Length: 397
Image 1 (cartoon, rainbow, N blue to C red):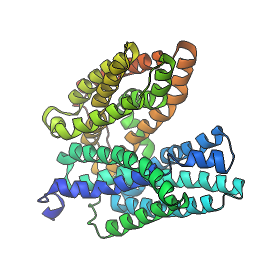
Image 2: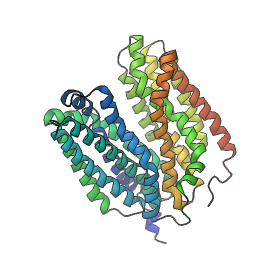
Image 3: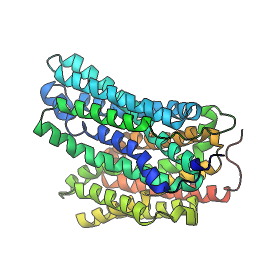
Image 4: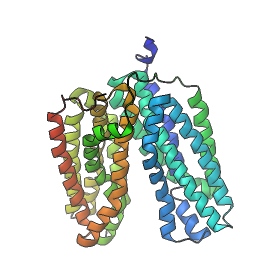
């Protein structure tokens, strides 16, 4: 056996290097977020519905591409999937530029943008989870929690950098430059990825994705219970603040992000030390408390504190569930397993808006956060049951 693939001298640096591809992918995803809606409304003269459809198309593309990403990575290697994703990112940049340049033909431009966002979602699915399994394949399952931690920081950090950077690029140059920046970012990442060492393919029988999805279902349901809180905060915190006559709702999301990243950086060994399910159980408790504070907040500062606690509680849920999932998944199916787990996050965040919107329409915005807290409690109960059954194999070939 080539020990270089399992015991590198500097695993953390190698992990960071690989997840940087995910960081670049999320920067590229963030670049158009703050500027495309205005272009659709003002230049193309379409309504807010079309703006929402175009922006949301990326998440549909990601959701539909998760199974394919897992299957391709399992069969041909995670590096191959990442390279495919980066090629798609370059194509996305080219089409974005064309769509903006052809604004004088509004219908052609809007359909190009719609296709571009679907391709961007495909690229995100091909890069995000395969980056994790690429690093895990090189450094072994003991580093799973560390890989997940850095990959999450890369994703949230990429969006945080990309959105304001897109506004800056538009103001300093022009809107079409956004597309060219995506092309350059994708090409740079592609050139670096091509020369990186691939992870060895997992040995064993490759199971159908539906089999893997069913096996991941219990952990996926826990992830849904946790992710609904994040989806509710991003969709409704501004409206909640407005309904109470408060300002500075953005500080809730800032507090969420800071607490999320702080938790991952400050406690890098918490999952290897205590285990996935115990950490997830604690996180869901903290998350539920944070959402209850948002629900009951008498002052905006209390709501900001609650959002920050929610970020703290969300921080280790996905890595903890990923560790428990991979512990009972054959190596030959690890890409499919993590892609299936990520699928539940996509579903939860996508459904949080419309479902919690119905709750808000009938009961008020505050009840959205009570509902999310109750879901966190349901996840806590489910984790307790899963922990009792943890010694039983979840996935068999």
